[in-house]
Image (tube, rainbow, N blue to C red; front, side, top):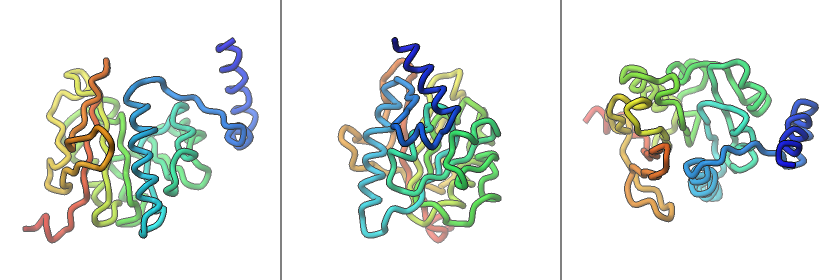
Length: 210
């Protein structure tokens, strides 16, 4: 029965993604780190969206079948970027671009986003310190002053063979968001993936110069 249900959902998506979305179809990835992202982190972002600054814009780096329902979970306007043209079908029409996270400033205006979520890139394309630092620079460029960067990665020698620090270039200040259970800017999930989330706030140019 589960296989039949999955086949029906996939068939409906292929027929009409818009209809599948209206029917509430999802293809979630069952993992503790994904549940934390979709519930606690997204809940925090939705709380920010209800604040005086309004919904704002969120950029999600990397798309796939299991992220297709994310725009329906978030109040901020959802944008996405992925290198693989095939993943465009999972993005919001008109708000998905094909390109690299290390070149995103070429696609977006400076300070365009309130939030950038970079989950699952390190070790899956960003495989060395130079690429990681380039991504940090690009995130800083497209985020508003004080904007939020959420990093997520598997902290294993195979996926992260270099130290991952959100303040590596002094572009971001580590922060502890008011999410239940989060007591440090670096939040390990302690699951079989050794997944870690890190939270940072974009620093002002003046603060970086100082």
